[in-house]
Length: 475
Image (cartoon, rainbow, N blue to C red; front, side, top):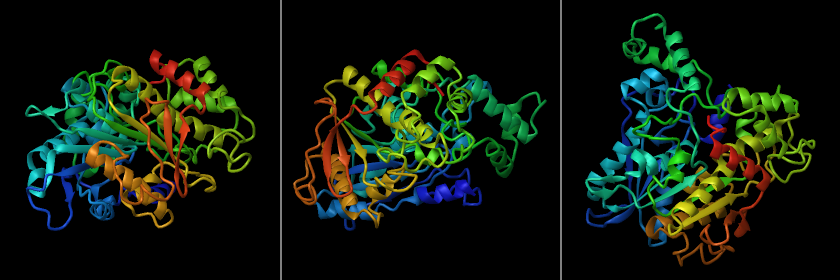
């Protein structure tokens, strides 16, 4: 029930009763009316989120975003892709590794991008002006598409995209497809499916009906369970498609060196910390992170991270800047801050730091959204930005118009600032500096934007940066 409530807040369907099927490799194309096939408009290709467990192209209608692009004289064509999820698209285990079928969901996404390259001109789009963008798991997928096949993003000799936008998600340090945690997931699915003891468990799984396999896949903990963002299904290195862990590929410069825009919500972790009410002490918190998240890290390493988030009765923690308020159980705000920073916010800064060193000439822009500051318990929560991007928010129309203007500019010019029409010339909107120029973020506030330094929680960032570099914080 909690998962369904949270899913409703995210604007997605999480119930297994929602329409599903493996015959899902479809995509949606939306465009301005009366566009000719020779218009050569910029193309925005959306990859939806959902923890690599759920989601659909049907969750978002781009009509408002397209209308905004037309009003600004910067028309775009929009594409959204479906891809296989959970065990259908991201099953781990040595059996999957040995069969050469890892990260099928990422290959679905790549196939959709190839379809765009082959066909989008018929819809008035320019295959040479594609920006890929996504949120959460979709945002993580955007970087993975940049790093697929060690950064080979060409098709028929031409780049599949020229720019990228990552909303809440960049590099996710991950153990290999056949790691212990991945094998535990595979074995649990095999056991639920009744395939234990068979000579070939993978062949047994393949012999199941869709409904049987789906039930087995869903038998392991999901993203809205106690396990939270310690995901069972996610992209893991397989040696070929995702050749190494994403942060290693980034460090080696083995990703597409295209201009990108990346950012987070201020309180990314609140949504994912509502179910762990039995975590009441620091020892509980350390054991939780050690057991479910970072089995390769020492207790001392995890304690060092936790110590950077003082246990001061909720003064520190997320929702940030709310003092003693919102601490719905003794370690809630602390856990929310840690999960948000580890999975999204401070890992974003790690990626930006790496990118600025590997490709210093490539433009990068970053943001932090704070427009829901003061929202009880959740703050500016994970995924709240989706309605702003799509213009479906009724509570923050000013924020939505500003966000859309920056994004539409970026779709057209690979620079969020190249838009001289409203609302960029009004509403207190500011120039968005490149991150390399002083490590400044654009802060999306409730009524306007401003720039802020990207140096908050620096002690926590240093611990995360060092742990990622050592391989300790792989999931």
